[in-house]
Length: 297
Ligand code: FAD
Image 1 (cartoon, rainbow, N blue to C red):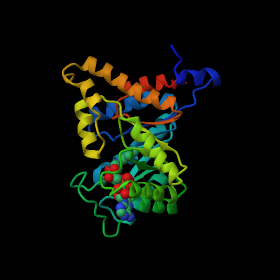
Image 2 (spheres, protein in one colour):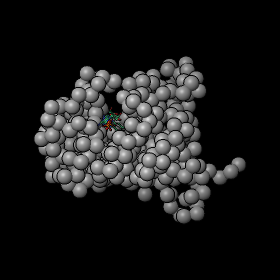
Image 3 (tube, rainbow, N blue to C red):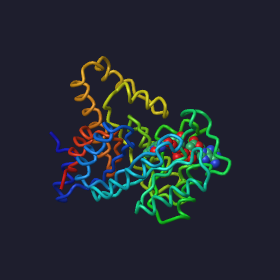
Image 4 (cartoon, helix red, strand yellow):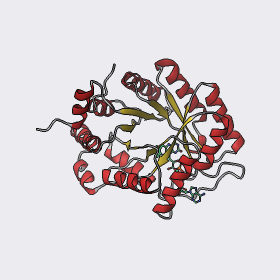
């Protein structure tokens, strides 16, 4: 059997060449917070490039996001990135959040437009005095400080984009406004990601576009998320999980096989950076990192 590419790299160089980042959401309850910290403490020793914490719909987690990123940095020493959106807030209010991140020593921001409070898929209407798009937000953040800024990219096109050209133009605007990298929306067919890289390359985009990997802790839950954000579930994947709702052990084994296939195929194609959506759980992500040779120091 051929030696896996991830292993070949580490044998040749003595170190794994992969950079990983982990995305969490701010916990709502004490029980959820316990799981959040347990996962952070398991994943921090892998020395991720950063751990990011999302910003709830309409800015609903403003204080919690700030508290979590500050605490992650203080407790683990890992670089923390705070997500930020411009939904339902004036520029002045959003700028105050950016200043609060700066004061707390947070140097990384994931800058997003966000979705309307009424729900994903509804037309986005900017606040009358607010930032109008992620590109506009990136330019605003740049004026406040020298942050490392990530933005979103869409392997299956943003659902509200009229066409691919508009979507790639928009991605380019965000990067040109001062973002360092893009992180993709979840997707399950690597061909979509490679087509995005190809389109971006042809448009002159040189910044890294890091694949966003969503391990499937619950196929039912992830299918719901995917439908809401415009990511499609391939038929073969639905078939693999079919009938496993009541069989958590087989579900977990299939989930790790599916995610491993996706990640290792990317490795075979030369991809070296990965962003994992953890949903505040560590087990599947720990296993995937191990396949990449990324282990606690
Ligand atoms: P934008 O890049 O501004 O673009 C969205 C759409 O509007 C695109 O179709 C674009 O083509 C179009 N558009 C933009 N500007 C113009 C213009 N001037 N004229 C015409 N059309 C335009 N959401 C949260 O609420 N909180 C989070 O923490 C969060 N984290 C995320 C992390 C990642 C990695 C990703 C991929 C998404 C995340 N989201 C989050 C979801 C994100 O907010 C939504 O996908 C949202 O619908 C779009 O945000 P954006 O930053 O891509 O918007």
